[in-house]
Structures are given as structure tokens and as C-alpha cells.
Length: 256
Ligand SMILES: Nc1ncnc2c1ncn2[C@@H]1O[C@H](COP(=O)(O)OP(=O)(O)OP(=O)(O)O)[C@@H](O)[C@H]1O
Ligand SMILES: [Mg+2]
Image (cartoon, rainbow, N blue to C red; front, side, top):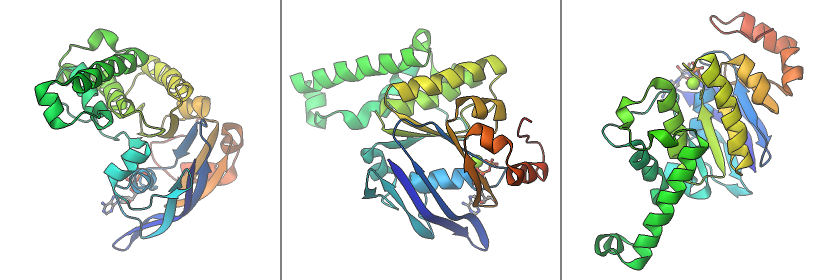
């Protein structure tokens, strides 16, 4: 589904991502891990075309999508969530999720203003899909809550809901469990599996090693921009290079 080849990003004198290669099959749960500053978020930004690579290619379902821009990438079915919580201001949760659905509506603006049958059908489908996504995320009871009033954990879920509303094929989740307590993280792990079972392939960047080890089918480890290991959770936990990279880093642990 996804093929990253020789992906490199140099910021001034700093090589943030260095000749990164990996592939991903549809339906597989892959995590990218590595110490702070390893280049994980940059890698997501390159895949989602928020940044242009210095060199290398990103192919999605056989098509070269390198540097085509975030909107074009979204049209191909790739969305990303953000490492930071997005602020959604004074819209309700349901309205916020509907923003994500927007690109799928086929009625024209005139159709929406004059409420043609086509526009009404689109609106109904969008509403049904938003409700489905909220249900999936366990947020149905919050549909009419103002987004800005949500607690941190639910705001992170809302970011995922907005991304899912676009009906992507691939979702890039940047630290979905950041700041969640252990119960919320357990529910998050279940959610990742549910998302995959819905036909959306997830890739995670995540520091919570217990969660990563439990949810991932394969893990890519980066350090200083380069891939230093790839394998199953069991293989990664025993990998000498990985242990070394994490021992050298502060405030992160591989969970051994
Ligand atoms: N726009 C930018 N301009 C210059 N340097 C940048 C830019 N974005 C990221 N960097 C640098 O590139 C390196 C990789 O950053 P990145 O955010 O990808 O790391 P990360 O692996 O996501 O780290 P973390 O786990 O802390 O989120 C860091 O040294 C960072 O300071
Ligand atoms: Mg990051």
C-alpha cells in the first residue's frame, strides 16, 4: 500500500530524515518509534506532503505521491493527526467531525444553498457517517458538546474522528496516546484495532512503549533520522541497537 524509498529531509545543516526505506501492507498495524528528535514527525509530514523531501519517493497504491501537497494526498486517501491537540473553538463535536467529511460531499455550493435533493442526501449521509465515527470512538454522548470544552483525552480522540471522517485508507497517527492515562491508553489500543478492522490502515508514531508493543504488528525504529531496526515487537525489544539508542536518550524507555 505504502512504499517509502530513500526518503531524506535536510533542514539547513540538520538531516532530520536520512535515507529512510520501509513498506506497509494494507491492514497492517505499523509503528515508527525512536528517541525525541529522531525524525518521526518529519517522516509523517513528508508522507502526508506537508513538507517536500530533499530526496526520495513516497508511493501509495503504486502511484508516486511525493510532494503533491496535503490536499492531493488527502484525495488519495491519506490523512494525518497532529502531535499537538488541535483547537476546534466553539463548534460542537458533531459539527467538528462534519468538517472532516466535507471533501466527500458531491453537491455544489449552489446546491447546498438552494437545498437540492442531492445536497440534502449528501447532508444526511455526512450526518450518518459522523455519527458512526463518533460511535466508533466512544464519543456519541459528546456529539453536542462544544469541542473546546472537551478534556485532553477526548480532544485527542476528536482529532482522530475528524481525520476518520474523511474516509481515509491510511491514517498517520502522531502520538495518539500522548497525555492519556493508562485506562484511556488501553481504550486507545482497542480503538486502533477497530480502525484497522474498519478498513483504515493505521501507522503510529508513539512513545508509550507498552502500548506500541501491544498494538503493533511491525515496528520501524529510527534514531537521528536513520532506520536502525525493523521487526516484530518481540524482535525490537531484544535488538541491541534499539536498546543502545534508547539508553542514550533521556526520559524515554523501551519497557524492558
Ligand atoms: N521545520 C523545521 N525546521 C528545522 N528543523 C526542524 C524542523 N522540523 C523538525 N526539525 C528538526 O528535525 C529533527 C527531527 O524532528 P521531528 O519533529 O521529526 O522529531 P520526532 O522524532 O517527531 O521527535 P519527538 O519524539 O520529540 O516528537 C529535530 O532535530 C527537529 O528539531
Ligand atoms: Mg514528533
